Image 1 (cartoon, rainbow, N blue to C red):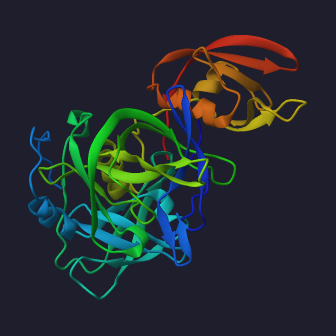
Image 2 (cartoon, rainbow, N blue to C red):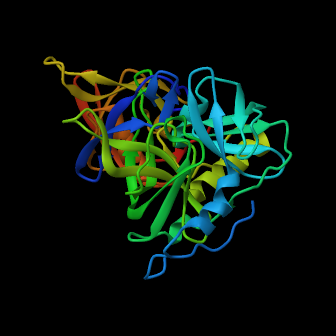
Image 3 (spheres, rainbow, N blue to C red):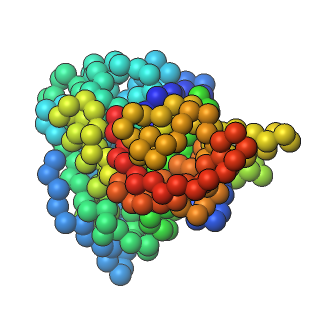
Length: 354
């Protein structure tokens, strides 16, 4: 699925469906505007001890110098220092459309100029580069595959513009597929997200979710929203796993783009189409990538995809959820409607790239 053209914004409150298995929640981005909410060396991951420590001060001392505040023309967010060369990872929706930034390093009152290295909206990740590298302390990244429900974690960032803030909770679940708030009519599906009860608020986006060994195991990105109160639901937040973060960031630093995402793709650009009653009824193919998975089986512009891998795809978000659970090379059946006739084709999924 071609998703690299979708616009991302750090400003303006964003709300969208968060799909987890068979359940649907609402989600909000975790950026901040001046007017209110809008939103490395690695080491083996350590699991939490049976008895929580009386204080997390030692962990906080390790992590705080590696978490920065990022200011764009549209708002505020957080970032994590990757290396002593000045590279910092954050969310693509924090970077938005900006190419220059102001970065506040812990312990330094003077903001530093930074520029965009690259952005990869399908995984909601971006890398920026700060020119003044003095005093930068890279974070240690752990193995997110070893994270498990019940592990104690800390969320470190700049919620509501309050720099160097820390909250505590546990990992509630792993392997969630989360649909982000839509931007410009599209939305991204984030596979393998870590669900946490650590309170995360606007401004935490792009910060650090860390274990008790002081290792970053995720990047807090969005929170579920309670439709009854119209705000973020307490204790339900989501973070992009560190294994994804380090892989995507390394590619952005090397070339400014992502060529090996590990994400499945149909090789189309598309939009949700509605039936006569105005309800979502399928995915209208707008364009087909030459040589892509869809093109190889004869899918054309104007076709409507109503199911993939045995799951209905009434909306673009539904299609993205199906693709997020698959890998490049998987063979799946697609139900395609053309000129009123429906057929089924077997598609070998390709790889999503920048």
